[in-house]
Length: 293
Ligand code: ATP
Ligand code: MG
Image 1 (cartoon, rainbow, N blue to C red):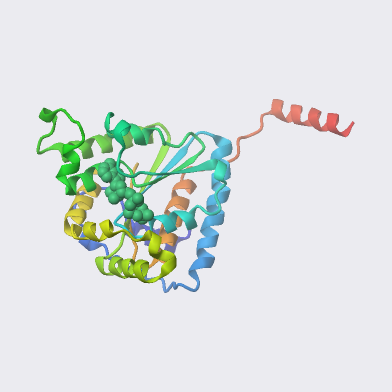
Image 2: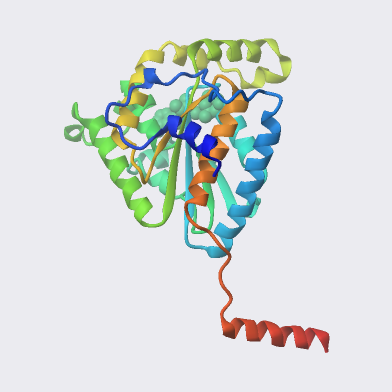
């Protein structure tokens, strides 16, 4: 990977929670490479192409899988990042799961249950639009959600969110040991930019459908959310399950960072097409002869 890109990525990658502070991360950052909106599409295209090539090998090799988790405040650009970054990937090799508030069946299980069902198979890329982290974000910010979770009362203590973070970290370590490459993206949008995007959703008719008054109410809990994100990142950032705190005030830059981070992870796997054994080669030769006859 290009050394400059590697250097920029390192600014956003969090592999240890020690001393992590969200306020050290600027949502407006643009990498300082002098890139701009004009040359971004071409760079993105190169990243998308690279992902497509690696994903083909991932699939052929059928050993590793990749789990990309996307978390963010509303209007930070999760949906559009997913749409652009994975635009070149073979639909047979990836799957997107979006997690909303859990339904009754889901609430009858432990919180990881519903997520586990959508983990990528070997050879596949799984994209989780929201994830188990909601359990330490929205649930932490709104105690009434926790009350509705049907947990035995004596298990609901002051430590519950620390315990959940511990369980998430342990689970991600387990996944990593099973060959699941875990990548977590927090699209870090500023409150001012979110306001602009909400206003655009109100003013532009083709964006009206995206607007939800509830999102404006959620915005009122901004500081609580930021604290919850900071706690979550501190407790779960690890070399085998890094967080990327992606500047999200410029959508074109967000996408470049996300594509580069996934490209880097795939590159690190040393993927290659399965090697053909002497025996398989012989059978290929025989098959050719049969077809030629
Ligand atoms: P969009 O950007 O289109 O609004 P979204 O991801 O915000 O996409 P929504 O339809 O708004 O999608 O629904 C997601 C909502 O579900 C979020 O407000 C999220 O906090 C909530 N949610 C997700 N997981 C949980 C959970 N475990 N408990 C409670 N609420 C949850
Ligand atoms: Mg929403």
